[in-house]
Structures are given as structure tokens and as C-alpha cells.
Amino acid sequence: MSNGLSDRINNLSTSQTLAMAALARELKAQGKDIISLSLGEPDFNTPDFIKEAAKKAIDENYSTYSPVDGYLELKEAICRKFKRDNNLDYKPANIVVSTGAKQSLYNVAQCMINDGDEVILPAPYWVSYSEIIKMSGGIPVEVSTSIENDFKITPQQLEAAITPKTKMIWYSSPCNPSGSVYSREEFTAIAEVLKKYPNIYVVADEIYEHINFSGTFCSMASIPGMFERTITVNGVAKAFAMTGWRIGYIGAPEFIAKACTKMQGQVTSGANSIAQRATITAVDADPSVLNEMVAAFKSRRDLVVGLIKEIPGLKINVPEGAFYVFPDVSSFFGKTLRGTVINNADDFSMYLLSEANVATVTGDAFGNPNCIRFSYATSEEQLTEAMRRIKEALA
Image (cartoon, rainbow, N blue to C red; front, side):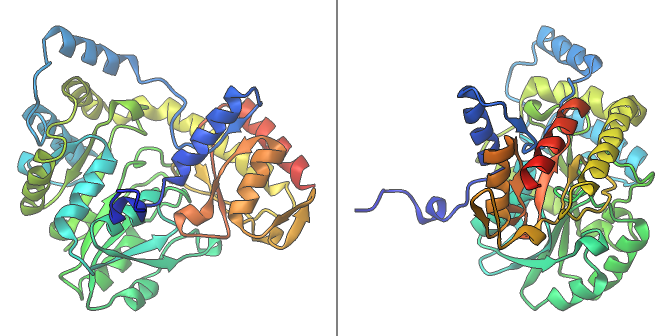
């Protein structure tokens, strides 16, 4: 007998980052001393000046429905941010504010992808990209990258993946899960390929823009010839430690922005009114307010990379942004550890949970079956202990 659910939901994969985080919480509730390095969430508090803006919005009674595409004052502030940080000249008509960057991505997919359209995903990629694309009728086309190349796609790989059915390419920079950051030179070379195919659009996920240790940041839309075919996705969750406030946004050609507003009007309508008013203050702030947090993440990155290099069998590069490391663990495949056969990254991740009490996420979820993802968005003390446990469990 059918369970009554749609094929759409039956075929949808569960987010493995959320699933592992839930499992870690469940084990903690049972009394186990779990160190969770699974969830991509800053362990900092939202800055006080943003919280004060939210309190002010409550006192000023911003408690009614907000415009579907966001308050005009917020869209104007986002335009100022794009100009200041990215040298992009968007107008409010190009901006759509949504309930998190994940909804922004979903809106774009629903508005741009037809059944059978192909979307190129440089792998590794964020877990939800492929499922959002499939839900929208598209076909994810994974292009594998390697740790030797810092998990970045080359222009030659991109061109080889393009077919008459290619509609879009989606990527994040800094990347979740690899922490890779593309340079302006690398984007320029990729853009040269895309200029041969004017009907291909780019989704540039820049949510980790400010958590960047490379000293530079480049938006694809700032490359000559790419502005009118790039949808820039961003938000305040990661940089301002506002994951629970649920505010994301896009900058896009006006016809795409209008389509996303139309879609959102039938799904969630406008994003949370109080969170939007607080976000005006966040995006108007000089990015230097984030220096202390970014410095802490860089220190943790250096700590974790150094400790992983001391663990035989793990292969690691040095990520330039976000707050993840993505070591290659394939040297353990086929081996037996404490009676457990490690066939793949899934087995490896579960082994670390059971034997080291450390929660990670399998790289299979990100399109790379040889790696696992650690989030270092926790204290240096916790990170040091986690790496000690892992080293012991793999000895």
C-alpha cells in the first residue's frame, strides 16, 4: 500500500549535515560526550548593535506583513553593501529578500530551471544544491575537483561539461565544504569560457564572503560581461552570526528578481519583519566590525590544519575561507579499525562518531566520496580535544 506521499518527497534526500547534527544532539541527550563538528554555524553571538536595532523595530511596531521582496530601506542598504564590498551597481528592483539564502536558491531554481535542464556543480558543493535542482526538474552535473587543485574547477573542466542542455552553473566561494576561494584571475578565465555560451546563467553563492583569509574577494558579477547573467546570493547568517534570523537575499537581473518575487508571493511572502529591520543595520555596518571573529576563525583554521597534518592517513590542504576543512580520508578505505570495516567516507564518519565521539559529515553528501567535512566553528579547546580523539581512534 502506498504511504500517500508524493514521489517528489519520497525521492528527496535528507540534508546529511542536519541529520548528523540531530544524531549528535540525540547522543548528547543520552549522556555521551559528543563534540559536534557537523553543523556550519558560527559559535559567536549576534553583535549587540544588531540586537539593539531589532529591539527598536519591535518598539516601532514593525509587526505587520512586510513587502514580499523586502522592505525598500533594506533593499537600498543591500545595494549600498553590493557597491561598497563588491563594486556591483544593483538597484532595489534587482534585490529580493528571502527567508534565508537557502530560500533564495530555491526561488532561483524554481524560476529558472525547466525539466531536463542541466546545472553544472563543481564538486564538492553545498549539500542542498543538488536536491534543490532536482526538485525543480533539473539534472545536476557534477564536475569533480581535487585536493591538489584546492577543490577548484578549471576552465577546461567547465567547457568539457557544457552541453546543449546546460542552463546554469552553481558554486560557492568561499566554498562550503572545502573553504576554497576563487581569485579574480580564476573567475576571469572561467568567464572567458562562459562568454562563448550566452544562454548559461551563474548562481554565485557568496554567503561566506567576509569569512575569508585570502585578503581579497571577487564577485563573479564584477567580471566584465557577467553582470547580466549572474545571480548573486548572500545573507547575514554566517558573517554576522545570525543563522536563526533567517535573512538571505539575491542581486539579479530585474526579470529574474520579479520572477522570484512572484514565486515567493505564493510560498512564504515577505521575510520576518523584525529580522529585516535588524539586517539594515548589519549590512550598513563596515565589514571591519567582523575582524575579531574572522581572526578567531583563521586561528582555528591554522590550529586544525596543523593538528590534522599530524594524523597519519589524513590528507589536507589549507582552505582560504569559510570555517571548514575537507580532508581526504580515502587511505583508510578497505581497512579494518577496531573491528569496523571502512568501505567509504560514510563508514569513516560514523566510525569517528562511535569511536571518538566526534560528529563530522561525510564528503559523499557534498559530491566528493573521498573526504569528510569538519566545521571548526567551535572553541580551540574543543577542536584540540576532537583532533586528539580522532588521532587516537585512527592509531
